[in-house]
Image 1: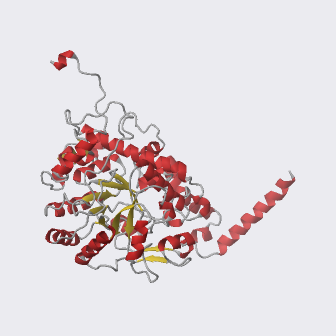
Image 2: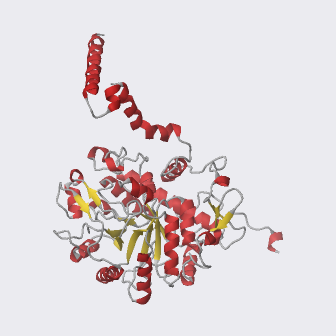
Image 3: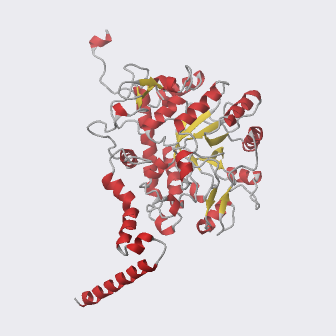
Length: 524
């Protein structure tokens, strides 16, 4: 009990000193007026997100991902039961904009009866990337699901390694993000190398793009395509800043920048200044590397897209793929006005871009990749119906490897070691085990997409058309997706040749049916 006799006076003294400090400080009026008690307000404020997430909020109230959505990702990543019981708790009847997928009673494809069948199903892209422009290294992506661009620097090294290992297991592409190709990207996963405004990893000492260094990077890693990042949904037209404290020797070596100095990404590219010079650069990169080359952009002003499509139609230059990023997409940090209000959300943005290409008969020559909360099956199905050939998953992949939506990506204090450069926090993430979870999630998403496609009577999600989805306007009205966005018949689908090719591929991969053989009566 001796310690108690000393501890109590010490605690009282400490509290008195804290109260005196509160009374004398001038920064916080609440603490100055209510010493000690005022601190409770800040404590509750700091604990608010956790209290709401685990105690207060309902299954569908949280953003950016609801509890139900996170639960589906977590269960899928752990290969646990990801079914939901007792019917939907979404307010379908009274939610305008709610998508309904229309199943077919009869169709070419028949869903397998066993729920677990299809985890290992192959789900390749319906289009061959780079084929339309005859790139030397054109290829058909083995997975319609890719891992979106998230840089080493924004994510920890173990997180990037887990995603790359997971991509290798799942057989999908992994986008490096604009931070360059790091050692953590070299664990078996095939890559899309993203080129941002700072040209990290392929720049000279003055920060200028260096073609020779790019070719060296491509030659030394399994890079399958190049993506020129024009903008991203969460902060279009903004550059980026990695503070000096985060620029470790490892990040500096990956990006080709000095250690311990602020790392700035400009808001615009220096290698081109309009659509004409952009296409010149695209063709230069494709000619020098043989790789398919595409662009990634959020959607705002449509003049850029119209001019780009006109030039592609009228000249022999063009991009091989277009990644459309929705304004609801995520990032480590951005001003609130940009995350909330700049750039169109995915559906509206994509549905404005696709017709620009389709009206010029370019839609069958371009591979369209969608991004922006498309790692959830319902969102992804709508994206495929609108004309996406592939979907890129970012935050959903983060959830699969341990993210708990703490929303502390910008503070370097991510508690699960995903979005931090704090070595102590990052050590908690085991790349080997989390890679398996990332792969399980990707395979489950592909399985669900395959099963929904078969329910719609087709073999592949890329064959789901806009008439297969209706958008509810409330309890008493619904409008086909085609009419909502003014699509013409046939828009949103690959070419006839690509449809035929992917049907042939899927007919040898996806298990069909599973019921008993028909009776003699039915065979008459």
